Length: 432
Ligand code: EPZ
Picture (cartoon, rainbow, N blue to C red):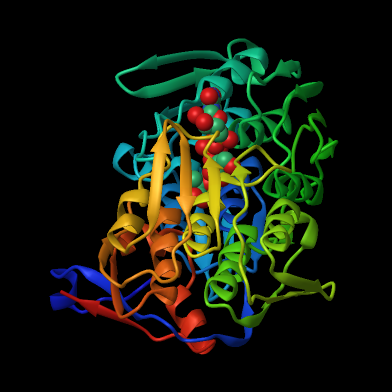
């Protein structure tokens, strides 16, 4: 969420004060998908024509990505839920370090920049709290398309040698189905000379959304959403006017808000096949879900323990592991949760324990014994999804929970407190 602060507020620490125990009711709207919108913005680099993206979420990360693209010469017009980008006057090939370091998705610019200009220098994205976040697969794939890539002083420099500086289509096999690597290489291949096949590609809905945009821009992509994606490179791509898919992770977080408060709420719009694993797990723990093709209604009375293991799509999404753990901390019985995607994404456990959750860990597995009631406490979200997990826990806790770490939350949730308050929650954003 993009929050406008008064000068004095800028000096203070923001927090959400949540009075727990309220039941929720009504309908809540899901915003456009952060992890699609960010990548689609970088795809504007593939053409000199204007690209209009609709259903854009109001998030600080979106603002950050806009700053990065403007710094390399992209002209941007912004509306309340749309953005217009035109990369007809690219001024340089290297986004500024201080901006890239805080926004991993900006590294994906290296693919379209290299495809369009034949040269790109992009700072390595910082590792973050949840893991090292390597870009080995991205670099390996660019080399397979004919780029010479070096990494010095924290900057990845790529150049296409030879006449015309145009990438050449090729066959890429990813060692792991990396979402960012798949997206980076799809964009690089979209302007390459010849056909590219990406094997062991990520199958996330955001990958399918990017393929849809490239096709709308005149590109040729098939197989997105399967492990093998084929891209036939074009000489040029034209502009487009494109709608971003709804945010499946926000939708899952809102469904979990209904479940943890034992309420009945409707979440819309939702594309059900984007949330198959999450819907199954919610039903397995006793929630009743009905899907009317546009939205999902969840009704929760008894919530029982379930086991879950995060996996690449279509498996259970790592981005909902922490929010789901908050629910299971209040379930009947003991759940076993394994984080198998990121090496350090269990930091929310300490904060849940401060609220009375009974959780033991062994490596990347958590044993969560449900308790009757969590108790409100001051807690901090260490990353975007951990912060969301603390908000959910606060909804169900006795008393007041003060959640800090909103700089993370506002990166990925568009007015979460406003949406939850409209359903009957009691949340205030205060500054200490
Ligand atoms: C995307 O990150 C999302 N971010 C993440 O969402 C999401 O958690 C992740 O995909 C997994 O679904 C955006 O789309 C902007 P990966 P990405 O490359 O592309 C390993 C959120 O909260 N790996 O698929 O960086 C890596 O270490 C964020 O919204 C390699 O080993 O994820 C990780 O363990 C967090 N080598 C796993 O793959 C590589 O070269 C998944 O990473 C690349 C990745």
